[in-house]
Length: 140
Image (cartoon, helix red, strand yellow):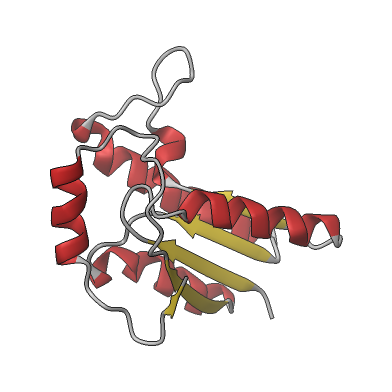
């Protein structure tokens, strides 16, 4: 059965790093794997990350579409590395997993690394305080 792995946490918690490392391990074993994030669409004309809160809805829609596309193509393991502060933010992905027969695993990242996206520390603290627990999530 294929796997959808949601990797959630505040900025700088290690979401993308874990997802990329795990996906590379799967690929080296010949298992199709991909990492998708709303940040993939948060780029400027030069392809550099450039946060713009006005683009958030578009970026999340594109992330969801890409996950759906990967599922229709039969990608064996799909990682989604987004903050998912609120449980409802993962609902579209859970619906897609049910539709395409993917098993869902949720990792909650708790690391405190350099925040490469420049999110202010006070905003990260607010996100951390508002992080809703997800049933069965695995803390890393």
